[in-house]
Image (cartoon, rainbow, N blue to C red; front, side, top):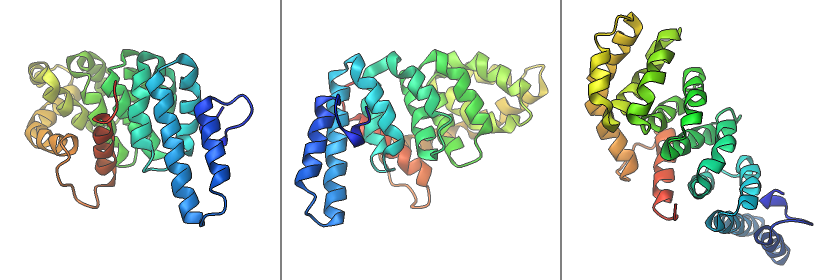
Length: 239
């Protein structure tokens, strides 16, 4: 069942969305799109608020259909399912839509899903877009729990510099001493990344707070603005 295409057997919230669509078909196209978007998000909110296992799959199936503006609220609501959402979030890390990859990484970090740590590290290394910085932000929320896996990933990577932001975020989430010790690692790439991370730590902490606390960001910071919308949405849902 996909919320956007409610039909026979659909969840009541999804069916309601379909009925609303029938009542607005005579309106202007722009108005119809707005009303359908509002109804779709309301259906997702209801499914997430109930937290029933049967509501998880419809929400996950609908995520790829959502716009960039809808995704932050939907992903924030998805956190109500907790660990149960893990497989869907891991799968979303490799989605074709960058915004979905990004918000999946933030959601994984928020839930601190240990089984998703390695997939998140893998996508962080593979990511070529500005989403990479936001995946690092999500990974940082693991704090000390991510240090060992990060160290191994850095040592095995052909692009260890890609892990500098992630290690800096990890340091800023309670693992500063552990990251500082890595500056003396016998593995050159690990020591290099640790030194870079500690050097950038203060600036990245300020930038991270700007995103999380809804401070002004530049218009060109599209990925950071999407993350900011996600953290804003978290304040409006019960998790």
